[in-house]
Image (cartoon, rainbow, N blue to C red; front, side, top):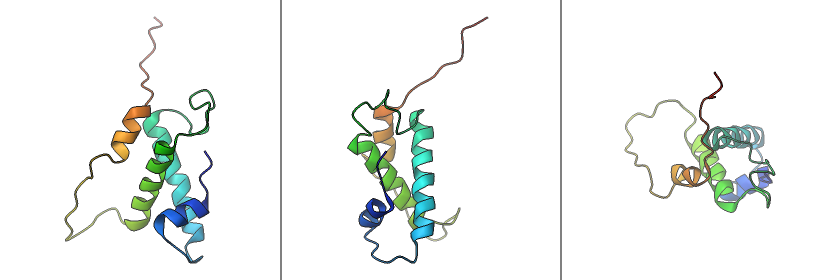
Length: 104
């Protein structure tokens, strides 16, 4: 996957360097989270021979934005709603399902 710190900062509309260390970690965490959801590495050439699809990269950026905006485990006094056509829907299009071994 070719997403960079600069890509994430553009997505977040962050134009300062104060958060670069945190944003780098957030991007790595978001990438790992999406990899766990789809069941394979984002840079797996067998799964994505033409490179990581744009919608999957967008799901990583959306997840990173969520991690950046919501740094605590709990929010108090807010109303939130999951948006349709979000990360879950993108991931569902690419998820690799694995089932237990049938070896006896």
